[in-house]
Image (cartoon, rainbow, N blue to C red; front, top):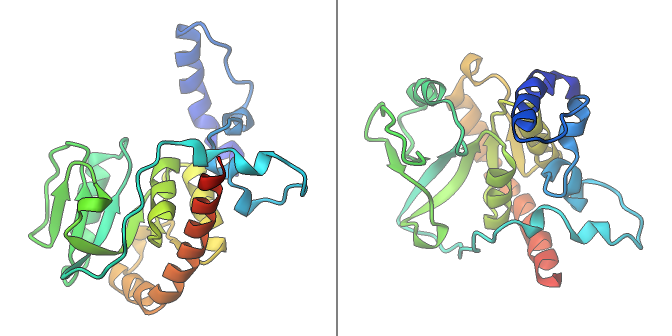
Length: 221
């Protein structure tokens, strides 16, 4: 499946050549790097007991801050698709959302057409200042967004657009802290949300287990 990422290699290579860099030889090389969640988070891979590699990787990215988890008056589903989302896809997806729930969409400053008052927008999210409880999130699965969810202990439904996003979500779903949803346009989202909500307590507990492990590693450095 990694080779399905190869369609993007030519784009990266064109950029690298313009900047005087060395181009990639194949799609596999896109997965080399110190800050790749797929490759580096040691919870997902077995390392030798004496390996120092397990305490480096994505835990070195900027700390978004840990929020307290007290229950607030209102609850929402967080919609966060990173900084490079496709606006037209997001607007179509918003139209499919069940209207009996409330949503908070991060827009990164983009002007998004909203289907109704059940979707609230915010440019960028500050977890310490939220006036609502986040029940769970719906994300594409990019490294930064996935890691932010893990830091905050928020389980998520992942809708991947790219191969890296797929594997980021897949690793968390393996630990039953997230749900991988590959074809949202062909599924009944109301049923998906209901099923996810029924098991939400378990998803949250599993995500918090990962959160505590990340915090523990963070304190080592």
